[in-house]
Amino acid sequence: MISATRPVALIGMPGAGKSAVAPLLAKRLGGAADDLDARIEAEAGRSVATLFAERGEAEFRVLETRALEQAIDRGVRVIACGGGVATVDASRALLRRCDVVWLEVTPAEAARRLGDDAATRPLLAGDDVATRLRSLLERRAEHYRALAVLRESTDGRTPDEIADTLARRLSVARQEPR
Image (cartoon, rainbow, N blue to C red; front, side, top):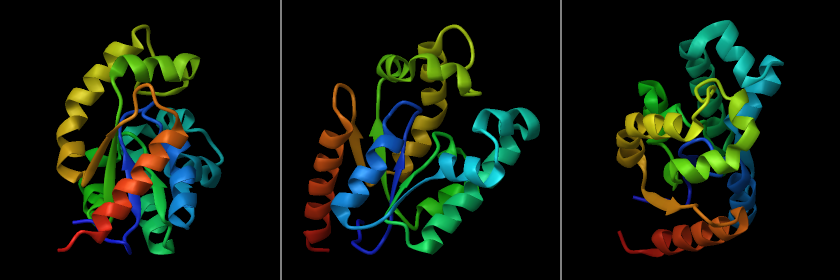
């Protein structure tokens, strides 16, 4: 059930547009946005890739869960989550306090959007980014599906178009009788 008082958490694969859409949607909803990866990098003074290399994925997910909890507690309106946030039990519990929107993107479109940046992403490093994205999606889709109150395809659309659509959809859903 969608609530006007709960934060909106954007989930989805790398390249789905979470970081680009979050500030635009927050502006339309009249609040602040937070990007968990950017916050973690700023607080740690290191890139996500470096944190993965130094501490491993499990420790990074602990940092991500903490950043998600802090964003919710601060009253952030729209949260751009990392692609793997839904794979952690503690993060999923926190996401249930949000209106979760799954930004869907095909692996081919995500690979195109990420371009050379894919090499800086620890779980995508290698030759065939689209294949790696497909594999990640297969492992994560069940979690995304279980959490999402809305799903929105981002293929072939600009962040502004996506933010406009989501703002309308959230507004309508919040006005529906319960």
